Each structure stands twice: as structure tokens, then as C-alpha cells.
Length: 611
Image 1 (cartoon, rainbow, N blue to C red):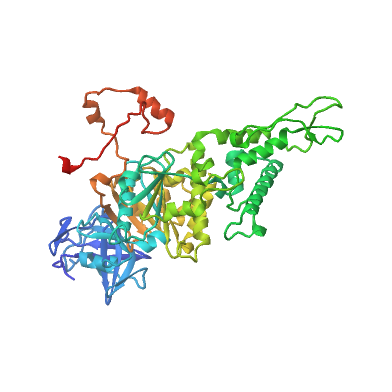
Image 2: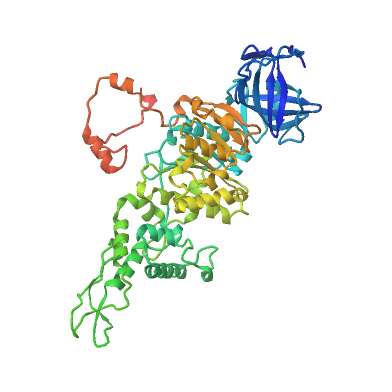
């Protein structure tokens, strides 16, 4: 090749493993090249190069560019011009034979092999055409006319992570990618996509409202209430929440009573698929927490009279429905009695915490779960099938679980509970059409660093680890979204086959991202602090080559509610009438839409014929 070829960049001067050094040609006097009517940026970090080798073409990514401190004397001029001392380092990533591109290398280039700029035609070989498993997410930063596509299969099954500092465009990137995934079908109604989004800050109901069904702990008029039945959780995690840390003896007292209540429920009526002989304390069988509290507190506070000390000294029976404890005659000293129950377990303190939890309205979504709340006999109006059908089986491809109204003290536990319910259901139904194998599920986890840090040791971290390690086989994919990748457990991050990195300034975060990358792209990762808002570096299973990409923006009316306040405009505006009583009302109600006075407005339809 000669310098007359507009794609010609230079020649290979050194080869070391997958890294090659390219001596740039003198003809590259400009940073732009016009090829077939398209403009390309030449010699940019993150751009692609092509090295022809017979019937094969090697492809690599530019990781570093430099020049010699002082030009060395050159005895013989090259055919394409004098050596300028300029060079670039390229990381080889894959090769193509004909129209087939494959990651990895079967051969290496030799010194003096020609190196060329990658054009739109070459990129089509790499990324392929518009196959069914490809989703468009944006354009190349180095060539805005090139569409960047990701493999949907790899993005979901091999897991992914979207990381970036606050304000780097993380939420917008998530919303854009999810819109691209759903738009692979002809229409929303025809889409078979199944996405569960855990929205910690309430950002996405506006951005994805036309594609999603939203469940919220503090629902708006167009949202569904979020309920997570406590009896679907494992007994250990439930008791840790409602009764605090328990000793072995105290734990046994609670679990024995739970087992008894579940057995009583099965005795009143069989549940499909559950053999009474296989019932455990962790089986998702309804039971009443009020009944649990009442029976245990009754046993703890009972006093007895009579010669055999076996006659209960009951004064008032109490009521489990209203959490009213039974009242017994206080015990007395001496032989007359009444006498204490010598078999009491000493669990009054955790029982008082249980009663306090049941009376706390903030936890109604889990302890009083609407139609899934059992009566005293353990009967419920609805079973778990309607709960899972509401989350995963509705007519929209995305389900948003808005957790912004959940108390922070229970948020992590709630996220772990939701993930466990969903994963266990999909795991055990993997051979059914509703299971994850025949209809996969993508779980998007916002603010993942809050519950999957290395030292968290909570139920959420445990189930996320399980999804990361095993979810691929059962059709459950994870997409972690975080502004602090250094606080995400390394085991979980290493299982994310695709990494979408936005602007990151913190050295610890950049170091964790570099360590998690499947490609040797340290030079490319050094660009993280200077990426533009909404610009990403994508590497891994879903991208055939590591790519620097500008993510497409969603429509203006479908942006997440995460933009910065416009301080200058707001402070220039004259203040309007303010009512701080409304502020206090929202604070007390723990709901942004709360009002001080309800204004009843009667709305009647207008009959156009009468006009």
C-alpha cells in the first residue's frame, strides 16, 4: 500500500503479544480523513485499525499515540515518505475472514505490515448487519455515521454493568438501552421482552412510562401498590427483620411456632405442588404474624393456679387481630400462686419488637401485603401466582419497582426479598413457558453498590451473587448500575461479561473497572475522566470490539428525572406564593403528592352534540 490510499496509516514496527506498535506515515498531516463521503478522525485513542494479512484482516483498537522526543536520523527514506517519529500502540482484538468476524487471533502481523483506518464497510464486517440479536444503542465517537450495536443475547445472559460518576449520563444511558431492547419488536404489545427494574430513586417512571408498568410503595394514581408478602421469604431473613438478632434457643421458639402455623394452614386446605411431608419452615406457605405474636406472647405471660399449677389465671383473652395481649393475674410469692410459666422461653423483648413492626405503617408493603395478607387461619385472598403475574406477566415489557418511598432501614432487605422471590420462581419453573429459560428475564439493579459491597453480607448481596454465578443457565440476566464500582463486590463485577463505562474520575473506581475488563485496554480506560456526558466505553461479550460510543438520547419527554436543577434560572425567577404547610404534609405523609386540603372537583363529560 502507498500513501495514496486514504485509509493508509503506517506500518508495524514492533509486535509483543497482542500489542503492536505502528510507525505512522508522513502523509498523515491532518487528524481528519474524507473517505467515500464520510469524515473519519484519524489516529484517535479508541478508534479502530485494520491490518490485511492475505485472506484475513486483523482488527485492533488504538490505545496510545506518541512521538519520539527527537527525530532519529534516517538513512533511507521509506516509499511512503520520511519517518516522522510518530507512533501509536494498538491492542489487537479479533480477525475477519470474508464477512465473518471472530474475536481472538490465529496469527500475528509482521514488521512492516501495512496498517489501515477502519471504514464503515469494515465496521459492518465487525458488527454485522441488522441481525435479530443486535440492538442499536448509539454511534461511534470517532465516526458519528457508524451505528453501534450490541448483542442482546450476550448482554442479558452474560450480565452487564453500567458504571459512571454522578452526572455522567448513567440514568439516561440505562433508559436509552432499555428502549432499544424493547424496540426490537414491531410494537410494545408484540414485544416478548421481560425486564424488571429496581428503581431506588424513582427516576424511571417518567422515562419509561409508555413501556412499563410501575409498582410503588407510595403509589401515584397511575401506579400499582407494591407488596412483598412476608411469608414468601426465608424464615431466617424474616425473623432478622421482625424480631432482631436472636439466640439459638430464641430462634428455635419462633421457627417451631412458624412451622406449626404452616402445618395448620396445610391441614385446612392443600396448596398445589406442596407435599405436607416436605413442608419446611422456609416453604412459601401463608401464616399470620399476628397469630404468631399472640400465641407466643400468651405462652410467655401465662400464669397458673391450682394444686397442680395447671389452671390458667386468665383475666382477659386479648385479641390477635388488634394485637391486644391476653391479661393474666400477676404471679405472687409463696404457695398460693398464681405461678409463672416455667417453660417460658424468655422472648418478650423480640415479641415486643415484632408488635412494634406490625404497628409501624411504614412497613405495610411487606407486613400487611394487601390481598396477600393472611387471616388468623393463614388464608389469603390471592396467592403468589397473581403477585408474579402482576410483576412479570402483564402486557408491557418492563416492570418498574419504585422503591423511593421505602425506609432506608429496610431497603436492602426488601431488594433481597424481591430478588429471591423472583429468582426462586424462575429457577423452579425453568422447564415451563413462564420460566426464565423459555422467556428470559433481565433484572436492572440501580445503585447496586448500596447492597452488593464486599462487606455487606446481606441477603441482597447473597442472591445477586447467585444470579451472577448461576443466572445464565436459568435465563436470569443482571444489569448492575452504579456510580461507585470500587464498592461492588469483585466476584459480582467479574461475572459481568459486558462493561459499559461512562465518565469516572475517582482513581479507585477506574482501577476496579480496569481490573474487570476482559480486554487489555488500559490506554483506552485512561480516557474515562474526560468522556463527555452520555459517552461510554463498551467492552466485553456484547460488543464484538471494544468501542467508544455516544449513546442515543431518548425523546425529550422521556428523560429520567435525574437532571440537575437549573440554579441560575430558578434564582432569577421571582418567588411565587409558598405554602410550607404543604412541605410538612409531604414530609409527614412520606409522599411527594400529599396535600393539606383535599379539594373535591366534580368532573362531567362534555356532550359535543349539545354545544
